[in-house]
Every structure is written in structure tokens, then in C-alpha cells.
Image 1 (spheres, rainbow, N blue to C red):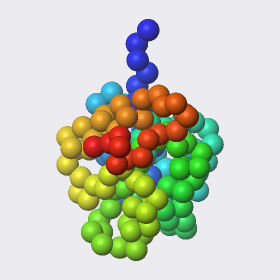
Image 2 (image 1 turned 120 degrees about the horizontal axis):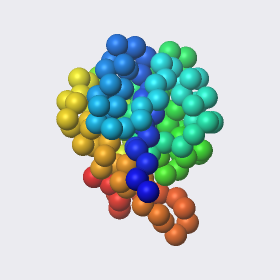
Image 3 (image 1 turned 45 degrees about the vertical axis):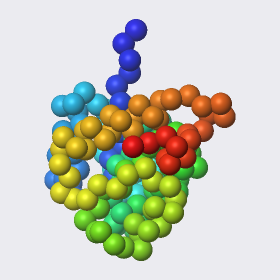
Length: 141
């Protein structure tokens, strides 16, 4: 039986960038679900499991940090990449404190993003004794 494709949740309020990221991941053979804001992302989390989530920090309404908190509660095996234009912000500091796996700064190099998502998805799929993901410091790139 073939291995299931990597499922990625993309959360980005710039629709052009969101579509471009989804196209890049889909060409690489991944499934990419798109959310333009935090409420849409939270609805998607209710309906499925993701290997990796790529989350913008600055979103309309709720922030990317709110999405990350929900991800940590509802899908602890999902690996989290923050994609942001900011190098130093309070939101990024909060996201790092929650234990994100990586930060990618915009504009992201497509090849780097695809490689990163593949690597993190491999870690996401590793079974653990308690069913939870190991801390990023022990498990991820």
C-alpha cells in the first residue's frame, strides 16, 4: 500500500502567497489545505490531522499564536513552522515559547520550504510510547 501523502495546513492572510505556497507543496506531491485567517484554520483543525502546519504570525482577528496553541492541544504530533516577515516580534517570541519547530522568514525559498516540510513530516509520523511528539530539541531539525 502506498504511503499517504504529507498533509500540510497553510495559514496565511495574503491570498496570493497562500495560493503560491499551496501550489509549491502540491507540485511536490503534498496535500495543502489553505486558511486565510485563524478562525478558518481552527475549523480545519476540527476536521483532520496534519503532519505539518505553516503559520503566519500576523493574521486578521486572532493571531498565529492562537492557532499554534490550538494545534498543540488538538494535534500534538503536528510539526509547526512559523512563516513570518518579522525577525523580532512579541508574537514570534510567544510562538517560540510554545515550542514551534522552525521559523522561516518571508520570502521563503520554495526548495527550502519543501525540504523542511518533508523533514518535519517524517518526524511527525514517528511513533512514540505515549503518542505525543518528542520535544523539538530531541527530535527535529
